[in-house]
Length: 559
Image (tube, rainbow, N blue to C red; front, top):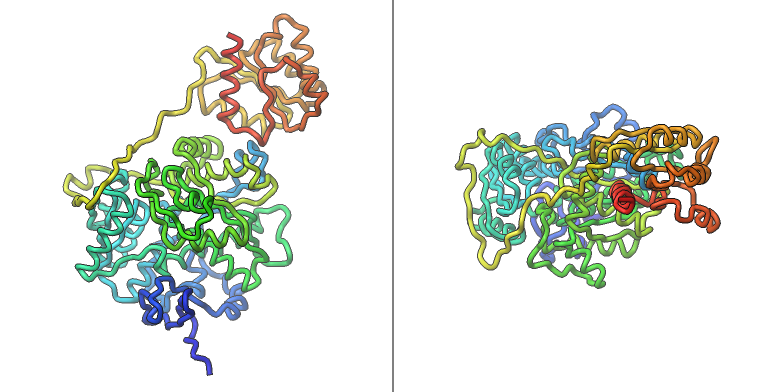
């Protein structure tokens, strides 16, 4: 007779001890381990889901059979989950990667993917009769927990590092939470919160060590698997009803998101709903990248960063704890990457995504996209692979006058602290004010539209377009632009012939020309171009910043 508890049950990853979910312990009663996984009846779920899911609401609770809540009456929900999976059309065209997809977690009730965590965590707390709880946060968790604790009727003590932007703190306070600003790092803030909870004998959210928090992140994987087949031209592979991407990318601090997403795909594979696991890319801010540095050193456990030096405060976790051990093992065994990006690369990515595909995001999400750019440029991600990037959140400021002045308490953490500057660094260089007229010669209307969009986002320019070489040459003769963006492969007259005609005309030969082409040029073709152009840029191998810098350089050289 088996001593296994009925489904679902908890299982210690260290010693295999099993415990009923009805009275969940914080740590393993046998070995003291702090990581307890939830095990479900996967065979039964695999049989029921295909029919059952057709009639359910499109939110994270549609997957309730694989979530650790025993009674639906305790569910605390505001419609979280069910977020769109968007194709980054313009970005994909620019980078030569047609299958870049964005999991748009900005669409949650409080504007971040932490709404999933908050919904399930508060539901489990309610089921456990918790009436007062403590959480430490760098922003989004505290905002989401505050909203959901209000709905659940649970008093929340939110401990935030004083480096968190005031807008986020005000949003926490407006829900009625007790806001405690801790002058110190996030790791010190967690220590202060833990001690407060111990003394007050209050329930404390344990972050990644909380099974409810980890389990909530699985729903991101479930949704992507359902959404992908409808977005991919090639359809489903291997006969599985759903589909996994080649890569899943997320910015990480404590690492809970990818840990939960990975378990979600493991469960989908076990149930036969997808036929492969994705590769994980975990991206960190370079000024606080303990996982990246430790992985590159080959360390089994993360080496802490004592003094984070990044303006991406929501990712400034110096001690990632058990997530690194888990994720490093996954990436070593299944492929994937840890990557670090600078604050400047992050701010650039935020602006690129807003201007190209209309997706405005918080800085932490920008880290993920900056990592995407870097991994593609390094050749780690192949241009034909299917990539899903988690756009983790969008911050909305709270009206200042609603709260008054006394909306938070302040404490100072013991030991040394480091003040980190806040605020966005200087904006990108503006184009020379003398440049007013730009000609685009490009036969692909979508590519021409993208180039026009890039230029329009940077300034008020008079832009001329032609979609074949002959019309383009006539346009250049007529309009005398300040600079030309020229595609080589065009009908009626190709780019080489346009350049030769311009070289033969004294009125045209001095106009700076930047060649933008998808064609891989032969040695003879490069020789044919010679010194007639200012710069050669291959489509899929440049970003809008590169293009604009080359336009500037061309104009400066001409001057």
